[in-house]
Length: 136
Image (cartoon, rainbow, N blue to C red; front, side):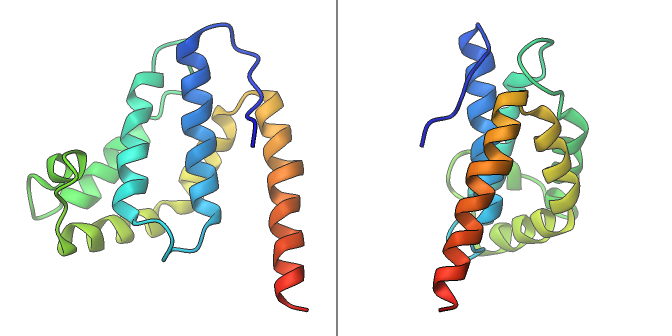
């Protein structure tokens, strides 16, 4: 599945790919992708905070980190190192559910107009058609 890029820099293309991946992960069943994987990918948006590369999601990431590490330190480090525990995973699930609408809103705003259009026409349509074939 191609992601349309209009950006001229590699960094901007990477950021668009990260944003699109996060949005597509949100479309999947919660059993398909561990919440810690989603958080790990969200943390990758830090490289996109520079002007011209994407949307600054610093506040969103900060709130995820604060929620996940509440009452326990080192959780984010374990997630980044792929050493998360079962409790860490539960913390990530809680944060992703709590911030899902706000996250989606920010990610949609971060998409280039071409990727925004692609997301709303192709990806959403595929999801609708797939759910209709399941119900038949």
